[in-house]
Amino acid sequence: MSSDPRPVFAPARVVSTSPATDRIQRITLQRPPSRKAAPGTHVDVRVRTPKGEDVRSYSVVESNADGSLLTVSVMRAQASRGGSVFMHGLVEGDELACTQPLQNFELRPGAHRYVLLAGGVGITAVIEMGRVLHRLGQDYRFVYVGRSRAQMAYLDELAALHGDRLEVHADDEGSALDVEALVGGLPEQGRTEVYMCGPIRLMDAVRRSWLAHGRPVADLRYETFGSSGWFEPEAFEVEIPELGLRTVVEPDSSLLESLAAAGADMMYDCRKGECGLCEVRIGALQGRVDHRDVFLSDDEKSADATLCICVSRVAGPADGGTGRLTLTL
Ligand code: FES
Image (tube, rainbow, N blue to C red; front, side):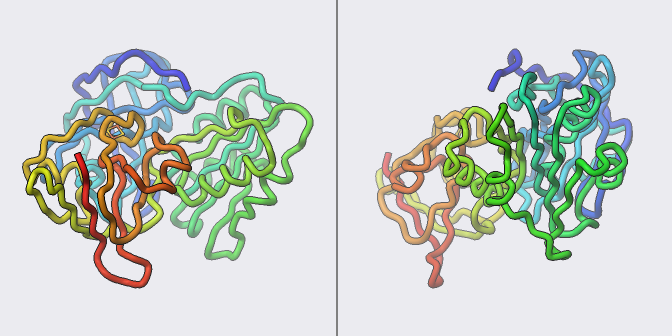
């Protein structure tokens, strides 16, 4: 993945908002010109939450030529830590701060064919890729998975542009995506690249199938923010004996936030599960670690020896009870 220069926050103004579905709000921001948002770019937005100011990342679904108008779409999270509530409360004329478009999910030219795979609000990360592939006359499929058509944003626009290249899989229609058929059915000849964004279970199933079929790792590309965890967030207890600290992590709080609120001075940087700076050793565990980062390898996650406290959590034991986590510094 490539990266743009450092994020530069600038004042931005909300120029319009409208619902894309009953849980997804489309918000257009005006900020100083930079450049047109390339496919796969996102902006970082300063949001105000009950716990103070924070930063959230949102894919750019549309922009104008100089990047002064940027549209994002935000899903109201069920266990929101405040970011999506803040974004859904924005109205025309409100002011905030956001960065220029930032790239970490670049659409690479030169493949023989492409598959775009979106689950739920993950559509926001690949919708512009679809427009570009269509415009360039590339060979592509656009696979869109959701609970129901009513909850799938941009469906009409996608159908109008992509015609029969668009495949819709809606759970309530009994047409769930067969991941094995999708990956196993990809042609062996020529390079096929898959770009995906969606729930972690979907992306993990694709990744496992991809590896099982021996396909090149570099040809499977994904965006992670917006991906949920393996379990619904629930309250769990955490303690750090060396600090004499014990607290509860509520469903709407991250482990990092809860430890900071309890007085622990923890290291972190990205707070997106990417850099690994917040990785901490696990001393004892009751329950299951919900690893939500992309920093640790599969083997490291299976070992449950460490976790990234900015995004990962603990779910209670499968047979019931509250999750408990002891950290070792
Ligand atoms: S702060 Fe970067 S992975 Fe947690």
